[in-house]
Length: 319
Image (tube, rainbow, N blue to C red; front, side, top):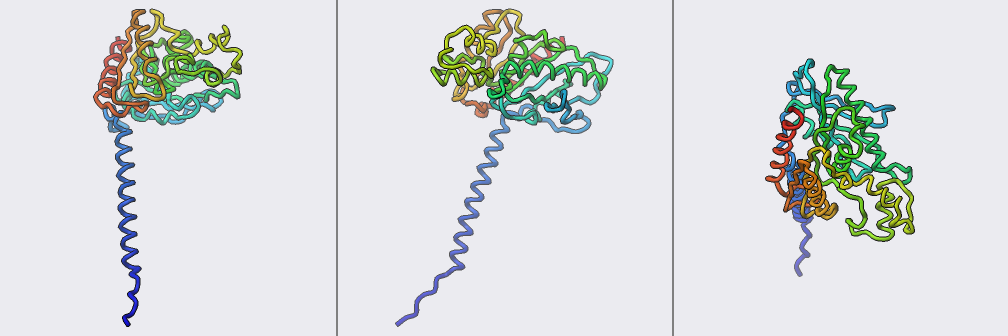
């Protein structure tokens, strides 16, 4: 009778090692490709940063220091000439995110000769009664702090542009239109990507409790279903909706939206852009046909967006 064949543990170990290596390789490849995809929108504005390009002042305080900002200052600026500021407002659903998102656009704009401030803001919080309008008012104060810091560094700011992405895009639009007289220097341009242009619940397809929840979350209010349709309820969401400010005195705007966005209805942007153009405002809407909310599927449109930003900054800030 023959002896039993011993189980080959070495072979099993080899097989498991191969499987592990294969899976690890697949995971690494996925993350590398994902990282490349996420950075695709910024390939047009990537610059090799060094002290010869500019200097970054990190974590500068606003007021008591609860809100911070970073300042990107080009090297070799003429302190005897008026300078130009771009303020970047980060994304994050109005309740999260950080100014660090601005590293690509900040370095790029500094390389083009603009001072760029990447700013944080107090998160919108319904429980604290702090809404979008409060965040915008805070941003006016932040801009004042930034302008004074530039003066301290030896630079007088002549005018500014405001830009943002997602939630930051909405805040940028509101900064340039809600009460622009509060800005420490004139706002001459807004450029943004995928910021909601309205908080009218009907435009989001919301009714009842969902509608009230949206309005309360964005305004810091405490409306109930019984308030739907009331003057106070309508006024609350209109005051924080960019599409409520489409007069002829609106500053020029560049907007970019993904037509496959499942978060922000792209129809909002088209309606908003149309209203601005009807009022005679220089408004550019760039649609990304293949992209969703992250705007990463249309490289050619990203190039067009930043080409347009370059030309409009020159047209309106440097004239």
